[in-house]
Structure formats: C-alpha cells, structure tokens
Image (cartoon, rainbow over all chains, first blue to last red; front, side):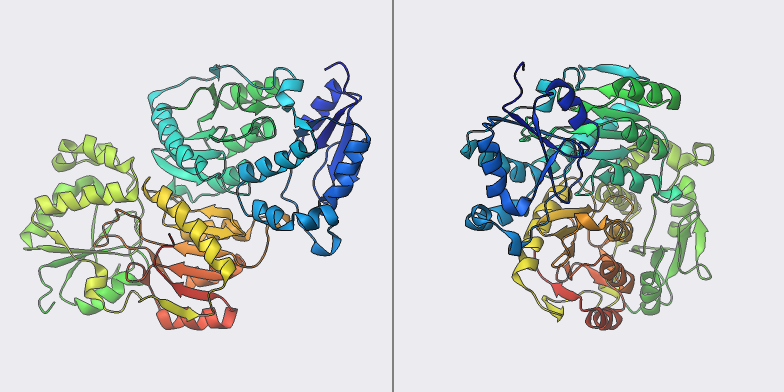
Length: 271
Length: 271
C-alpha cells in the first residue's frame, strides 16, 4: 500500500502494531484509553464511550481503511461518559459485549462499514506472518495425532459457541479449554496441574482460528511466550493452522522449539 | 438394604464413602493403592494393575453389588505389575483410559457386570443427598438467567464430548470450562483472573450431570468447599440440577451461601 495516509491502525498490545506501522508509516495510529497499546508515543488516544468523537476524527482525516492489530481487552463502558453516538446505540453495544469475540468484532466492523471505512488484515499488510503446512521442529508421532484429533473435536464444538481458540490435550484428556483469559493463562493452569493428574509425554497445544472468525480483524496469534509457556506446561507439541494463525518472531520460535525439544507443527484440522 | 454383606464399597476421597458406610455397615470396603480413600482404616487395598486378584477376592466373598463413592483419580498403570486378567484386557483398558470419564466408567461397569456384580448408586443408599428444584439461598435475577442459559449451551456441547461437568459464565463470557483438574481448580483459576478482564456481578457456576453420565457410578458432587471457592471467585450464584447432583453437608452449604450472599439455585437446564 503505497499511500497509507487514509489508513488508521487501531493499535493494541504486543509486537504486531509495530510491524504494521513499519509498512504503513503514514498511517494514523489510534489507541483506546484503558487498553494496552504498544505504539503509545505515536498514537492519538480515543475513549470507547465516545465513539462519535472517534468516527468524526477519522472522517475528518479522510480515513477509508482500518487495520486492527495487537491484543485488545473488552472495553469497560461508563454510561456517564457516553456521547450521542454511543447513547443512540447503547443497547446494541451492550448486547454485543455480552457475546463472544467474533460477534463483538463483527458488530464493530459493521460500525466502521457504516462510515465507509473497510478493514484490512494485518497479515495482508505485513508479509510472512503466517506459515504454510509443515513440521518446523521435532516430528509428528502417533500419540500427538490422537491428541490433535481430540483437540480438534473440542475446538469444533467450542468454535460454534464463539469461545477461545486453543485447547490442551494429553493422553486423550482435555487439560485446558481456553476461555476469556487467553492462551497463556490456560497454559499456566496446565503447568500448575497436580502432578498425579498428568500422564507426561505427548501432550499438545492446538490453536486455530474459530470457524466464523473474521480474519481481517482478528487472527489467532502465538509467539516466543507461547512456546515458553507450552514448554513450562510440559507439552510435547504446538500445533497451529496453516495461513490462519499469526506467528510473531518466527525464527526465535523455531530456535526455542529446537532447544526445548518441542515439536512445532503447522497442519490443517484433523477430521 | 438390610443385608449389606454382599456389597462392596469402592471408597475414594471425601465424605461420601463414610455416609455410604454408615448405611451399609456390613459392607466390604475396598480402596485402590495410590488413589485417595477416606476409609483407610476399614479398607482392604487392591492394585489396579491386578484386577484379577481384585475380582477373585470379590467373588470369593460372594459380592453381588458394588457402590462406588467418593473422588477417584485415573489409575496410573504399571505394565510390569499386570496380572493375567489385566494382560488379557490391556488394549481395551488402555484405550478406555484415553477417553472421558463416562467412557471409562462405562467400561469399568462392564467389567463388574461380567462378574455378575451390579452397581448401586450412592444416592440410592444414602437418602437426601440430592435436592429438588428450588431457590435455597438468595434469588434469581435476569442477569443470572442469561448467564445460566449461556452456561447450559456450553455444557451441552462439552457434555457430548464427555468433558467436565461445570462452567463459569459472567456477563455472557465463559470464564472457565472444567477439564480434568475438576471444579475447584477451575474456580481457583477464575478467582485468579486479572481484574480488568472481570465484569463483577451476576457471574454463575453451573454444575450438572453430563448427558450420558451413568449416575449409579458417578454423580457430580458439590459441598461447602465449592461454595467457598465460588465466593472467592466473586460469583453471584451456584446452580445445579435437581435430583442429579450430590450436595454434601447441605445445611452448611445453605448457611455459607446466606452468610456470603451467594444464590443457591437448583434448576433444570435452560433451553
């Protein structure tokens, strides 16, 4: 994208906003008050209670594309601060907040589209964020495959409920199903599981896009932290989908996996 | 049951085995090595690697009924200790262990039935373990009902996968889905969730029987610990199924709920 002056980057936490900004150096950067933002020094901060002010700002700048990048928490609303725009939509905003991430993001995208601002995926701006199918460290053995199959069955069901993107399975047993707290807290919980409940060896973390997930505005993401947490949780493999999961610091991820004897597998869902 | 000499109680951890033993004072008590057992001083201990020895013992005593009571972990097998009985069935035993609790217990029940030993539910021996529908502390409000509905939707899906019996939902978001570690660890994990992710107020713990669960050998169970953990996790209500969830120390549970302003609701699944 040669001219990035008409693009806004909504910047959350982590490395991804910086990578997007490197490619779109003329873009306008927005953070939201009370949420993580890794581009603080470049960002104009808006308040989620005053989306009318936010969209006026974007429209005045002639913005016609939005890139959402990085981890973002759900906004905490304060009714006393609502502007007219939010007041007029408060019922639908509150109801969207009570649904899963996909439903919430679909709603937010609809607000952008109403202003003629279309979303672009971070992975369309930054090349090589995702990976093709393959084994990038270690190997696949039969134990892993059975565990991956069981994990995919669980993800298929939770996916239909718009719940978390990752699952840990060991010896056929679910040790973790991701909820609101995210992948790293789930892995910490697996790590802290009482030793007699574990059958060490062959356990897998499987992380995939949900079935109806809008990949332009939300892609599952892993990075070196995930690898370290999976190792601390004594798992044998990390498994993700080809082309649909962002891997931050890929070389470092592969290096860590090799060093820690963790398999790193990029593979379609098991049927 | 007036004559309990032909009954074996397989005793796990917690209070339930003691309550069953009070009613069946002539019963034979068995614990398994390496697993919790709350009737240690009365129990003969068997080893799961030597089920042939175990069934010979039961048959020699003319046992024709089994009551399984209390928390039990999955057995850790040691191939070097297998007797002929286990050797002959090792493939099916190992495969049962890689499935969910329902599948495993169904398999174990089939082994008892092969020996003409039929299961009796702990709740058929001890009266008043379960509760009828009703509100036993606090009240139902609209927020709770929406959360219960969402929790029941999740339990319906996980149930079909033979995964845990309980779920925590707050403001429409899943904060916990029980896996192998059990209800209390899930609640501890909710308690430790970072404060900005929480929308305090109206959160519910819903615990129910799974759809194909054999209630004669496995019933969901709660007790004062669960109430204390739900309070520590800052939830507003504990919800269970009528007649199908064991509540240990019921008066103490109700007293705690009243003291801690926690609603205690016994209610069929929401549709």
